[in-house]
Every structure is written in structure tokens, then in C-alpha cells.
Image 1: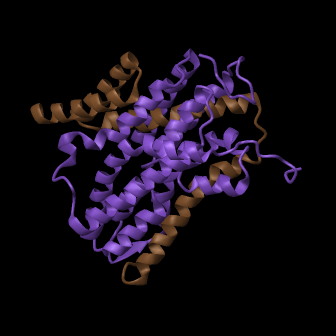
Image 2: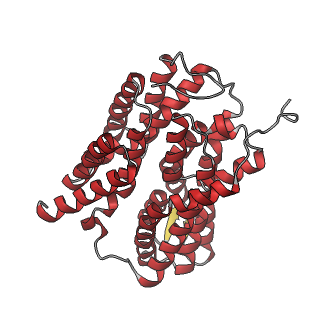
Image 3: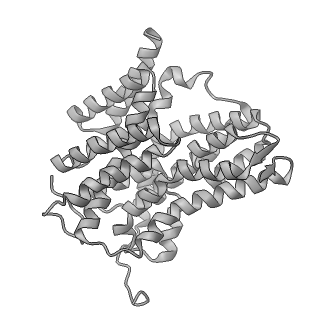
Length: 104
Length: 245
């Protein structure tokens, strides 16, 4: 089935995208309201939470250019040394810019 | 049983305000991405008004860019729903991870604040929760800053074109990645968590290589979560949610 992107068709497309996205925002919380939070489930949730970040970042590093790799490595090292997010992020972005300017 | 539940989590208006300002710096970068989206969408033939409406209602950048890839005179419904769902399915896990806090909030407010759930404000809330602090205010205040920045950026891009000729050359495409990485490394790093990260990283890479597109985040996160399921931290308790590193 196809939707036309002429006139009000676009509004329908936007409405569908909104509903699907809303379902993802609400769905996890709604499903959890039927689960008894045992220590094991709590442990699963907590480990999963930080794994979400890793699962976003690792493929980003592998699919990215040298600038992306530089940004993520510099952010990681700075964060581990300084322990403050803002300098770490700034250093990472600067690294990406420099690598792309000089190497690519 | 549910009716006489009390909801002890009290959302503080002052903290919501301070979290709004705390996420303003990262929101400035979101403006740049919003402008990129606004420009791309109008180039695909959306009117500026439709483009702004999409950013306002959907508020999920990666999936909006992906929808543009499918744009034409007609859009097939099933691929659209599949792509938007796949890319945004990480929200399912993100929301679930906040449930230990969200169950203490009345349902109306609970689902209301989820409207503003997105990567950056969730990452802050999840990281603080790992350190034993409960912060749902950042979802609202920070989310509001990110949402308004996304709409404002889209508006700029739709009417005035991209802000920067090449944001990538300045490394701006890496802002969110660097932010999320800093949040991850700022959290709990017990051996258990490090094993989970290794598993999550490997699983997400495998999924990225061999599974259908856009399934790598959920695959990696669930794989990492399984480590926590089988290797529980004995010191952690259900009520406080504090994990001791």
C-alpha cells in the first residue's frame, strides 16, 4: 500500500510516523508495568541501559571515517582522565575537525 | 490494587528549569542538525510548514532523515512504518530502563513526560540513576530544550537553508556520539558493566553487519542486558537501584 505525498497525503505520512514513534516512547514503559521488578530484572535493566549507549557508539565508530574514530577515542580518553563531560565532548569534536582538515 | 498506589516521585519545577538550562549547550548543536533536516526535507519537496510539523510531532531526527530517503510522489506504507519503528525501537528500551523511577510517577505525568524522551536527556537521566540519583526532571526540562531546538533548527533550515555549508568538516556530526560516549563512561564501570559493554559492542557490530538495517542498537542493548540478567550485583537492591562499583 502506498501513500501519496501530494497535499493532505503528507499529513497522513506525518501522522503515521508520529504514532509509530509514540508507540516506541510509550511501549517499553507500558510493557514494564506488567513486570514485577525483581533484583534480576533490575540488574537486566541497568546493564541494558548503559549497553544502549555502547550499541549506538560502536557501529558508529566502525562505519565512520577517521574523524569519527578520532572524535570518539579522544572523548573516551578525556572523559576517563578529566571525568567531566563538556571538556571531553569539546575535545572529541575538535579532534574530528582537525583530523578531517589535515588528513582527509 | 493499582488504584490505591501512591506515587512518591515529586517532580520539582525548579529542577525542571535548571535541567532546561543544563541541556541548552547541546541543544545548540541540535539546532544545526535541525537546520540540516529542514533543508533536506524542503529539497525533497515538503513545504516548510509540513517540515516543521513533522519535526514538532515526530521529534526523532534519525527516523525523520530515514523517511526522507523513502520520499517520492508516493511512499510505501510498510517500509515507512518498518524503518521508523526499527530506528526508534531504542526508545522502548530507554523507556523501560526508566521504569523503576517512572512507576513512582502518576500515569498521566508518566506518559506525558515520555513525549519528550530522546537520546540526550535519557542518557543524562540513566547515567545519574546508575549513580543512585533520581532525575526525571531532565527528561522534561532537558527534553523541552532539545525539542524546541529541533523545531527551531528545522524552521531555520526550511526557510533559510543549512546554517553551515559543511557541518561535518567541523566535526559537528559527532556531537551526539561524543555526548553519549561521555555519558556512558561517566557512569558505573564495574567489571560486570565492562563485560556487558564488550558483549553489547560485539553484538551490535554483528547485527550491524549481518542483521537487517537499524536493528543493531536493540540487539546490542539486549545482549548487554542479558549479562546483567545472569550476573546480578548482590549489593544492589530493588528499591534504591543503586549499583555499587
